Image 1: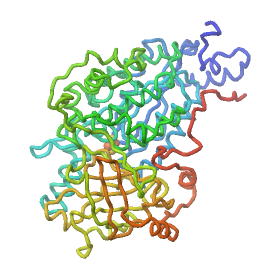
Image 2: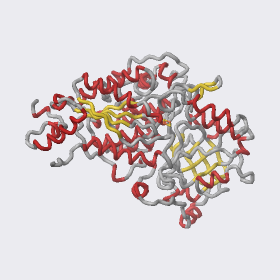
Image 3: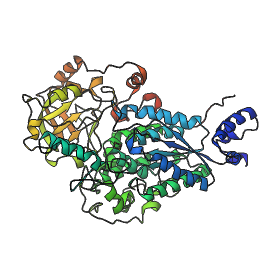
Image 4: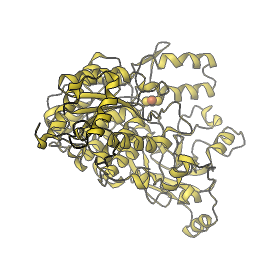
Length: 577
Ligand code: FES
């Protein structure tokens, strides 16, 4: 092999100048039975695996890794699978988001520190996608993503039920006395009846779609169900392709540019994607040294109709979306209207236009036509005003039309504990016109910015048959949730952002059409309240949580740790044995 074509892994496995090191690097690897010829300078492909039995959405990832390995071998590469921190949305406390940045550090250092020439990222459950993209972005090797795919549609007592979205509905029905405890428990396995991640257009499926829109996966990645043979075929082909990418030196940052993020924002609008995409894409962009801010969401997301009729905004689930044509057909419709940067490169060496121009639709009720969309102005809306000088967000497609322009009396909860204690208090001064306000649930306040923004409605309101009210917080919400929920208010209350000044009884004005949210209280009073405000801060006993609260940035900056922003590359100092 000529020096020009020498891959990074050769520094470990083919050095003629440091023979003792080479012996150690190769020799210890060979205890796994790898024959000599696999160390001949061929591309070494890392398979970065978030498999864990505690992350049920990623529980099938070792099978996916096996398919990737077959493809890598076929293309003449040497695949090596390695585990990284797996942040489970359904199990991890206090919130998986607290550990997204920790996981990204693990990913970054594992890729950089090992003899890897290219990397395949196996991602699925919500935070596993951004954490892997963030870590891999900071290293910037040739990278290809594979999502684990959604679960099959849930079916329960004659009804189709979707992950997360179904839980919120069942919970509301249980609280309103419409269903029994037994009905509620019986729905569990009916909802989660196969391997895979949440099959609504929640955060996992949104991020899978973002991976596809960014061009960092093969086309069709997002929607193939986890148990469908085509998921394993795509994994095989991804393994094959990454070997070529290493030979072409087609690195992460050559694929994902500012223009790819603009495409992703538009695709997010068209699919009715999760609000969490805003925070995760900002964090990934930060790692690639690309400035992506809320103004970009406003600029690119404007006038993009939501055409994908999936829960929580619509009716269907990911399995239906795949059979209807999936993300490729959504991209095709955006391309036809000249809404995308069509020459953006993707991992297969083709542009987004080349990949998707011939996509077809097989069910126009699932993927609607642009001229008859589900919601004419979908996407994520940015709200600004004296409560949120750095912005807050809302997903209008999951909200109630009649609340888009509304003035109401604030009912304030200083913490999530206070919310749980008081929300069902019969003496709480609240009705359907009130605006529920929750503080101290932002990045530093919770910490980790929990998905508690879609506050449960008071029982006395639920019993009237009301199912939505305006809710405002510095928290996030699950991508599977719905309602007129204003999130990510920045700066957060815990750093004395103006949200901290809101008191019960104050009037708040929200106009989603105009992008405003204001506290109708004199500015002098607001300033005075902020001066005297004592945020409820969490007790931090040290460890990672201490580092997190000391360094986490606000929601509008992606809630990454300040010292993790940027590309640090793949170079690493040689350690002599
Ligand atoms: Fe894992 Fe929803 S809990 S994707």
